[in-house]
Length: 354
Image (cartoon, rainbow, N blue to C red; front, side, top):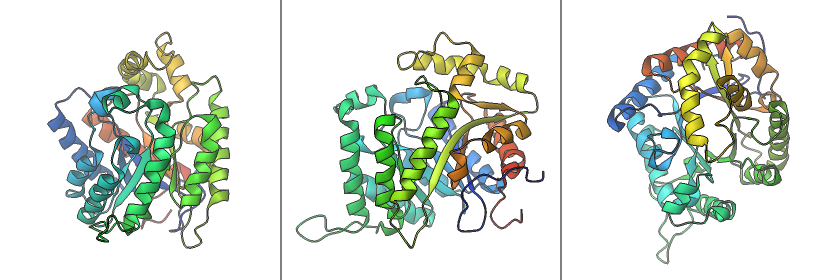
């Protein structure tokens, strides 16, 4: 497919954007089988040319997810892949000891040959904060303190009176830390600027319309946060990194795609009933509010090209929620996104000519 649109702010290798995928392990499988499928999906994504693959962190099967220990899962994946970068989107840092996170991250980075992309965020789920004995209302303050500590440890600051420092060294990981901003409009602008001042990447989640705004308003707000981030950047030797996540479901027939994701929508509505007023929505209404893009790749490319946040992104992160696809369907979605959707946006695998 010839390139129809070009999105992205450009990256150092000359391409307009990098392509990653976010893996949701939310099928009703035994954990061991889910993890084996994760490995196989990352192997397939690497063969398709994806630049990166990412996993989330959810404790106690929140959101029906299996990944409570993302760095452990990525360590296993690292031993079956060679090139694809391995990311967390995101690790809930305030519920962890930043020193231990730094040790685990540096170890994974060494095992993977320097491929870890460490995305961290504050995490909104009350049940996790309760279980870890922390106050959810303090999550933003705890996140700021935890990120500062993580930076110090990865940079090699002495950790005790003996002058001991992190081992394995974390200087490479330090240059690949990403901060996920809060979705709170009152805080996100300064949070994005703070990520820029720290020299971290900026991660933005799906621009859904759950706060009363339209999807376009949510996208424009994200574009403003990106501008604040870039304005605050102070690293002359490194380029800003902006990752924007979007839910896509490429399929030749949009009606068939809606039928495929309907069970997943009902599943998400049931789980989200305590968080959002989503239970009374039809499947079509839910998909519109969640801004999940379904249908032919050409149509999805048109919608993504009109997204103001994506114009300033360096990384497009595609996810296939709320479909809860089977392994076979996951492979189809990965393939369609890499061979049909992303090329229509100007992307091509590293090493290939556009």
